[in-house]
Amino acid sequence: MLGSGFTALGVLRNLAAAGVVAYLVIDVPDLTKSSRWYRPAPGAEDKKPTPGTLATFLEGLPIDRAVLVPCSDHWTVAAAGLPAALIHRFPRSLPTPSALVTLTDKAAFGDFCARAGIPRPDTWLIDHPEALGDLPEAAFRNAFLKPRDSQAFVARVGVKALHVADRADAIRLATHYAAKGFKLILQRYVAGPASNHYFVDGFVDRHGDASAVFVRRRLRMYPTDFGNSSYMVSVPAAEAAPAVESVRRALAQLDYRGVFSAEFKRDADDGAFRVLEINPRPWWYVRFAAQCGMNLCGRAYADALGQSPPPANAYRVGRGCMHVHYDYFACRELLRTGQVSRRSWLWSWLTSHKAAFEWNDPLPACVDVARILGRALRHRLLHADPPSQRS
Image 1 (cartoon, one colour):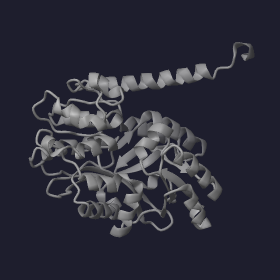
Image 2 (cartoon, rainbow, N blue to C red; image 1 turned 135 degrees about the vertical axis):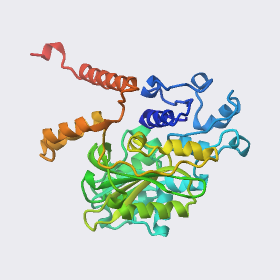
Image 3 (cartoon, rainbow, N blue to C red; image 1 turned 120 degrees about the vertical axis):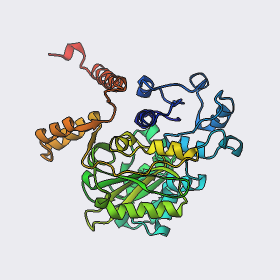
Image 4 (cartoon, helix red, strand yellow; image 1 turned 180 degrees about the vertical axis):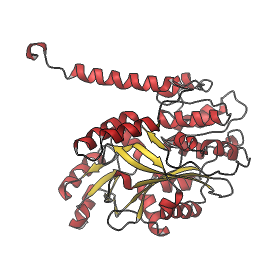
């Protein structure tokens, strides 16, 4: 396994549930290391391999054969682009490098959706900030800037996208981030609340069969504009049938293979399911899919070895999943505006799966809570009033 964070923790737990022993290459030390199933890949903690040095690291790895399971965009690109000499020793169930470029570069993805006829928000590629001056004024109404490389942008800036007030504001922001090496696109914000977001997750095997599909609906998110899901529920595929059909069509045209997670938002203006992105890898809540009966990581492992995964069973609908920390802040805002009640929030908390906590693997949740409390304490100490100003 290659990666870290909630995605790696979910994949690790899914592989353990499938009876697979996993060895991890973790790029950022985090809660995954506290899992009962954590095993570092031999030499990984000393050599600290990166996506750029993956091939060299694997060549010296004292393991005869192992399936590769990347858990981030950069690791996925590195694993898919390995030299042919390493592929037999390290099989993987992944898209081709060309498919990855199409899905991970926002500009390439926009061009693909236009050719494939897949509904998507109005989008404008920004080769240089001055190009914003050529766009019509209407392009800046209810619009935002987003990076072409999301992973690198979030790692350095800490947000997924940037609101723009008008043309001048867009040019100012684009110029600022272009100087930092980021390429951006301008995109129209799809109307509607967080509950209009749907995720079509699944797996495509080496024969192109996308029989394993899992659909979940976002009910709350934080931050409330460009944030992550904080509470979601599994729903029947028929509830998002146009989105499921779009995903199947897109992946078939890309000759896709592997795990995927596609995000859509149902436009409040016309009801269309507009695709926002298709992640060509496991995602934060991949464990939730398995808890509902769809272990996609186990299927990818079997497919990488040339085996036939078991038939995809119907998953359980109406199940909830919550990221408690994010949902606390999401509900704090929703309570203030009367969009949620304390009773409904408490009920969702009591009846949902928790992103970090599992009874048979409790330490990652403890580590996560300790990290959150430690960060809150440091913030309080740094921003405390001087003693002379305290009452």
